[in-house]
Image 1 (cartoon, rainbow, N blue to C red):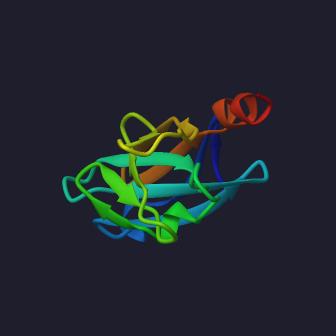
Image 2 (cartoon, one colour):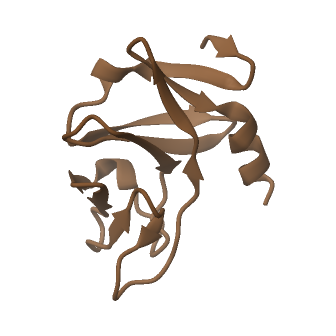
Length: 114
């Protein structure tokens, strides 16, 4: 992995299918990277707030993902379950540079200590 200050290259944009996800490990935390149909990127902890299901295996629609275990819908922008369900997930800073997806490792470490 390449490091630029706190930003770490984790994969290429083409490694994440449109309307899909890819799971990576960063500082011992499973992170789900999502790519929307409009090529927006989101990074959240790969754990549903309901029963801990792997969100990276869910179905992406719009700016949301449906958990594969019990169909909870997680809004990727708000990092929260949509009503009537309640719960939140940790969202991580993500950016794209020249086709490379980067995560802010410093933010991951800070959030993991909460």
